[in-house]
Image 1 (cartoon, rainbow, N blue to C red):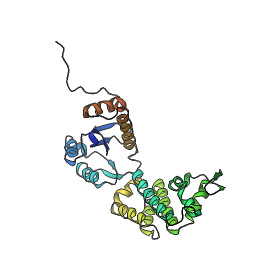
Image 2: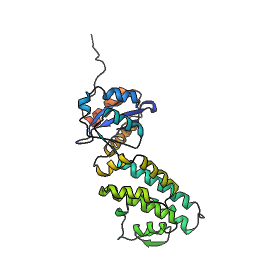
Image 3: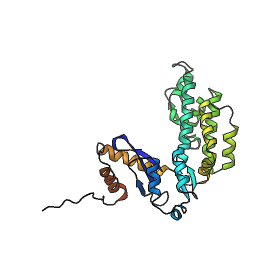
Image 4: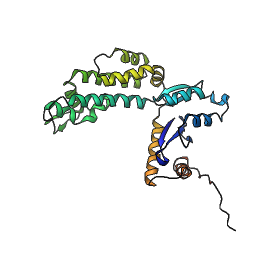
Length: 264
């Protein structure tokens, strides 16, 4: 379950099949709770009880709907949003640390540039091939470049190590280590503490994410496709026209005609 911005800047609800070809199940004209529940209530309770998992983001809005409509389903928080929240908090930590130094200083330049490397999963950092960093005026690997910045501030280093550990636990589906990381990190930044507090409040669904292979990635990709369709069409003013174009592009089905024109 997710939403995207469509006609007149309005948010539309979208849900897709989490398995198989990730087909779009429904797009609604709005994302009001009443509209969503009315749609799902069209299906018998016995059918809705057969749903095993519902994947959403950390928005409690959809979690409440999922619990009410699919009482037997396991609610899974999307791992993409978990990682996105942590990297966003770490980036805020990096920026605030960087601002403590003069713009011409070595510390500022180390944290200012190559910022994308700090947000990558550490296992994907290249530690073999050397490149020349013109800002630091030296040759080093991607891993060494990140380590240079982490030595500047202990709070920054602790925050980096915490998110890398949680990324590793999510990848390895290690629930016990994930809980340990959430409750034992003390020297992390206030931004990271706020994110971890959110995870603790939603601990059950976060742990479900660590053991499930389902993710909101397909629906995020679907939303990106819809945005491209809207840009190509310079936007839509008619909801039916937008849905018809999406069906032609992704569902590979002919759009439903609202009326048939009869020529005398």
